[in-house]
Length: 167
Length: 128
Image 1 (tube, rainbow over the protein chains, first blue to last red):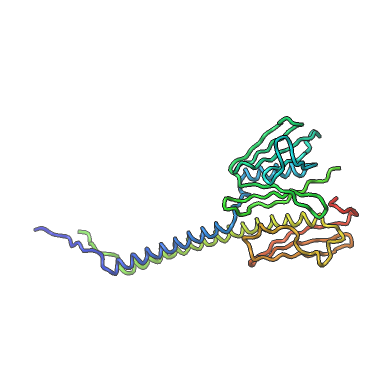
Image 2: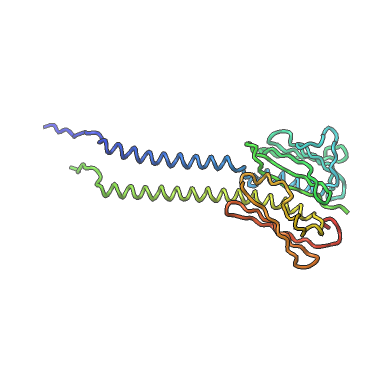
C-alpha cells in the first residue's frame, strides 16, 4: 500500500501574519537607519579621537605659544588661511621659522627652517581641512584661530591659541 | 512514527514574546547609544566654544570685567551651530576688590556647560 503525505501550503492567515511581522522588522530597521543618518548629518565628525589630528593640534599649540612673530612671507611661502608662518624659539634658544602647509587636502606639512635651511619636516595624513587665521584679542595681541572642517564642510575644530608673552 | 503537527498557540505566543523582548531591548540600547553620542558631541563643541571665550576674558582689561553692558560672549560661536537654539550667559562675582570670578555658561536643549576663570588685578593691562 502506498502512503502519501498530505502536502498543503500555508493559509492566507499564516502568510499575512508572517508578512506583518516582517513589515514590523523592516519598519524598525528603516527607522533606526534614518535616525542614524540624520544624526550623522547634523553633527561634525569628532576629530579629537583621531591621533593624527591630536598630533597636529599639539604641535601647532606649541609652535604658536612659543612664537615671537608671524611674518607674511618666508622663502616661497606666503601667509594665508592654508599656510601659517611663525618665528619660534627652540629649546637651545636658537630661532626657527616654522611653516604649516595645509594646501594639500587631507595633509598637514610642518617644515622647520634654521635661517633658510630646512632643518626638519613632519607630515600627517588623513586629516580634515585645517585653516589658521589671525584673530585680534582685546589686549591688542593677535591670536591664531585654528579651524578644521569635515568633508561635509561642518566646522569640527575651532581653537584660539594665543602666543605667550616673551620677556 | 513521529507525530507531525504544527506549533500550538502557546508556543507561538511565547516565541513572539521572546522576539518582542529582544527587539525592545535592542531599540532601547540603540536609542541610549545615539543619545550618549549626541551628548558627547554637544559637550565637545560646547567646551571648544567656552575655552575660546575664556581666552577673550583672560585678556579683558580688569576694570571692564564687571561692567554690566560688557557681560556677553565676545567670541565667534559658529561651532555651536548644530546645537541651536542655544543661549549664553556671563556671571561675574567679586569675592575681593582685586579679584573677579567669571563664569561662562552655554545653555542648550535641557543641558548647560560652564567654565570659570579667576582674574586678579595685577596692575597691568595684559594677562601677566
